[in-house]
Image (cartoon, rainbow, N blue to C red; front, top):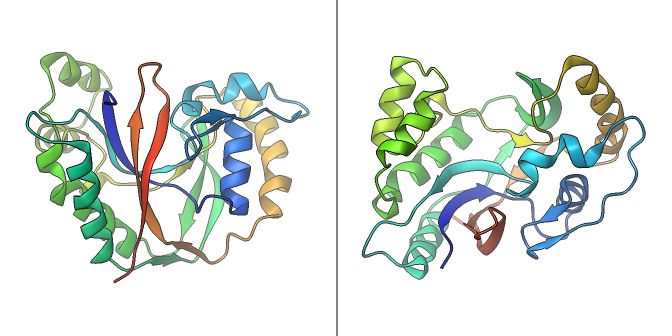
Length: 226
């Protein structure tokens, strides 16, 4: 069994964005294997992607959690499949490169209401599978100086950035200083310009598991078919 599970959006395996994301980060969660890093002029790609690499290229829907006692991974997969069968694909105006604090990510353009609703359903409807946070886990999250609203979400749902605090993004780097961020943007922008990201459709959700090294592996991917 994996030590934690998560519900992410991951691009369709084999799609241009999935291939790019795995190559850029150096880890393919769909195959569970490292991907050799092509040269990236002006940046140390291995260094700037060290933090997000183990998660694979993804957008968080329901953040990583330990499985509650009495629940099995196959039951979680079945519950996610049922949710996806009852949810429609979400088409965004597009995705674009942006700075979020000190890291770079792809973020959505236009109305995010349908995507936020999908994420809220996953957080709430699958929460019975999540083990409660330990005191140590709570303390670690609270070290980020959460607002009272974020702390309430942490207590209720195990993570401070869900529901009203949800901000969808596909992470591309760890935290960068301003100069490194500028160089990374210069490398990323022309590569992303080659991809078809406007409009962009979220067509499925993926169940992943975290192994003992901290790397995430795709367990199953479920299309949104309502």
